[in-house]
Amino acid sequence: MYARFRAGSGSTPTVESFTAIDATKKGGSVEMLNSAQSWINDANRVWGGVTVRRYNKAIVRWPANWTGSTISFQAINTPQADANDPFAVVVDGVLQASVTAPADTTWHRYDVNITPAPGGSTVEVWEPFLGRNAPLNNDADSKIEAGYVTGVWGTPITAPTSSTCIVTVGDSILAACDTNPAIYYGVVGQLRLLARPLGRLVVSLDYGSGTLCGDGYTGANLATLIQQAAATTGATTVYVLFQIGRNDYSYYGSTATHTPAQVGTLLQACVTALPAGYLKVISTPIPQTVETANGGGFTLGNYRTQEAAVTGTNVTILDGTSYGIITGTDLYDGVHLKVSGVTKNVNGVKAALGL
Image (cartoon, rainbow, N blue to C red; front, side, top):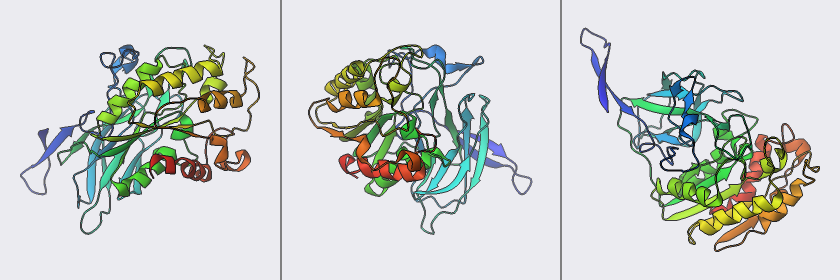
């Protein structure tokens, strides 16, 4: 943390502290580096010659019982080909503001007015939707479009911890929603809101266009990342929600081909490599408007069958088609969830996650 000066109301400037934010100060954050995750290509941190430090999306929490009416933070956004979702400012579990940062690989300052409770509030900034940049499903790591909090003015920041955490592994089904900010209204955000009164943290490893077999990692690699993410919270009880696999079906043959059996094998390898004490919850893909055979002749149902066959200690299999999601009502594009669909998805998985 260092100090800087701002103009005061008189002739004497006021001293304003600045705390740089990295993975050690965010909630549930892992810096993505080849030295720590072997499948990561560090060249994918560079956008137009500018290196943007790469993380999963996380939360930044202000000190407990915060009473200030303004928070000030610095943020950066990579270029965005898919979407430019806002950061969410959440006070006591309620969305109070959205902040959209320019997608220009430049640091910007944001001063946000909030209304804390009289005795002080829990104030957080949630980082926005992440999405894999093209090429997709090519059996290699790729750039991830993202926005990150990189600093906070006016207060020291420490990473929140919890005895219990939930790690989410998924794609845009978990991350997206028809209402912005998706990080608040989508499945991950709504799980965070359920976990909050229990003092638990939700760690997000999901991102748009993610696949199980096509993003460059092995089952053991993914298990390593999950454990790294869980360790950031200090949790001794760890739930892992897998809701992924739809894109292995949908992107089949775009740049690589992955059969249902390959998806099942990778997921099984990941589950097997995780500690036995972890509570692993596998939600098979939710219904889609179109589920006809892909270029390999496989339907989405074939992928569900393979995921449902995964076994192991503390493994719970949930049928994603049993949540009551109606494609013509609860999906806004035949694939992604409306708010109504998010509610059904969350209701379908929450009990297995201890919520």
